Length: 303
Length: 259
Image 1 (cartoon, helix red, strand yellow):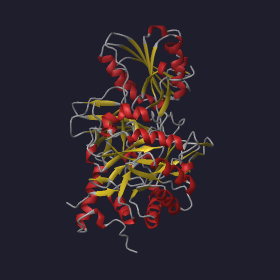
Image 2 (cartoon, chains in turn blue, green):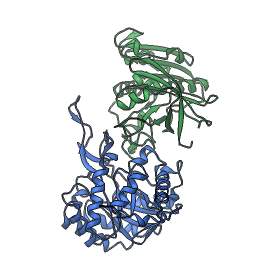
Image 3 (cartoon, chains in turn blue, purple):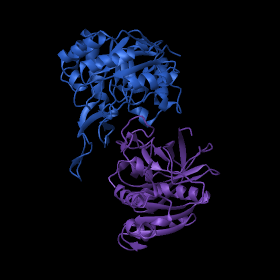
Image 4 (cartoon, chains in turn red, cyan):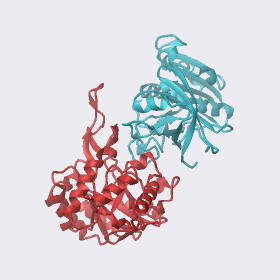
């Protein structure tokens, strides 16, 4: 058995497999299927200071080897999370991160302040990359100045580990990664979904109520790998790789590109047990190649 | 009611007509209790492009043989692959998912209305209603007689009536043209329906006008089937609810339908 533990700033992960925000609910939805405490960590659903009803439906369109969603950060708000959901999550013996989003810098700050009070939450993932809300979200994540502003503002009120989740809908992700780090990010997670669109030729209408949505699934893995590789060259903070990871081999590819940990997203919908299979598969790979630890392969792409 | 993912073996695959198959799957372990209206999410394997599972109502259950069956209408690539599953193959099945229809214990007169592939969820419903000593009437609507299947099975649980748009079986017209939803509607204390949304809305409108309890089983595109992706929402009096976990069965009073 290889050493699967890894570190993201102050976070000690028993293994490098986390779950992507919005694809794992609050963990409890998976209790029937697996022991959530066996994971390296979970990132719970995008949380905003005010409750959000989310977008109208249809909210989902399956595309070739992928899916578009336009959920729009439906959640009951940070106060409800703290009072009604958080107490249930304390049963898990793993890292729980909250994905924090907002429409204004003040909303990000208020939300982060509430989460900062919750002892059992080990960190936040700052969502500056949601493509499905009109104001905020991705609007913050696509220019260096606005990234620096929102990240440094939240940094001033949040003192545990702060991961910043980057948008792929940009021209130079390396520059944006640097802006997030200079704003105070302890680590970066990438990529969020790619902005896409589906059209029904018969009805001549867009499939999604919001017309555009975020593309996820194996279709986006090559883009995600390229971006993780570029960001790994640009900054010196730990990276969490996300994007179309369906099995252990996909995960290994992200480690080689420079990720210290990974998040599994869309695959959770198809196989709720996939995270445990990926953990086992990473262990098998390391043993097969005589590596004693996951750190032996992070960024070890042979050029 | 624990949800599970299990590989079930295809033990029969019956082609009902050009685009409908009835597949029967067997579990090597005892089945979880399945309630009427619940569904399963089936994995589509050996397809280059299909990613997500496909949801299907559970058509019938046999706890002695540990079998479940699904009525599959071929709509696209995913349903085509599943409908053509060879006997002996295994299908990864996530079940049982969703809530269920209310099954009254008192002897009530209940009308069950199905349209198109919506009849799939109504077989075990009719069976459960019948087993609980309710008096069941079953009204099935279709385009043509060739689209109507399994009538003899339905007739075990209640009196069966049909309407077809071309008049090839039963009354010519829509289900809402049938006297059961017209002059005779007052004899029912409940109406349960599953089918195309315009049909369910028309049925719900009749129920509403006559103050009859009405439950509908909704369909929606879903990525997960267990309340995580929040894609399959519907508008309710309590805000957006997931069709997969808060439904698929809803009382019409909870929906924001303009009826």
